[in-house]
Image 1 (cartoon, one colour):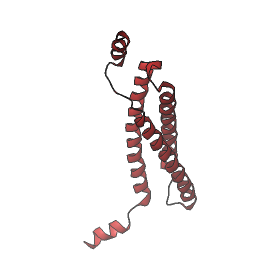
Image 2 (image 1 turned 60 degrees about the vertical axis):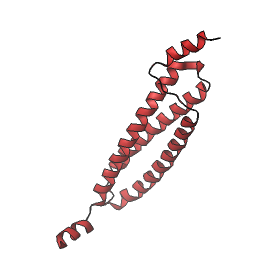
Image 3 (image 1 turned 90 degrees about the vertical axis):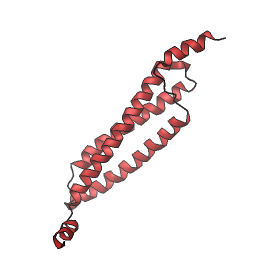
Image 4 (image 1 turned 180 degrees about the vertical axis):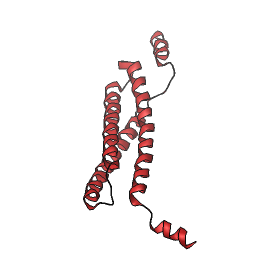
Length: 133
């Protein structure tokens, strides 16, 4: 039992941070996939969508910011937080990532608020809508 407690105390903070970064990256991939699907939909519907330009800008912004966060994750993942010089850089990068992730979250809440409606065949729905007077 004492050995287990010693192992818990000696937990490698660098390994923990790396695992946390990987888990966050996986969540980022899931959101990136959702945004790619939303972008596909909005491009298929085109100008027929009531908020086409706004949605195109917001979805594109979200994707660009997610790519930025991915690059920052690679940078922060390469740091060894057991070294003093890397700790400062890791703290700054972590704060930057936190702010960018918050902005991504706000952008995606706005995207959801403007109601991207998913359909496997949005163009057929537009054609049906165009036929009705």
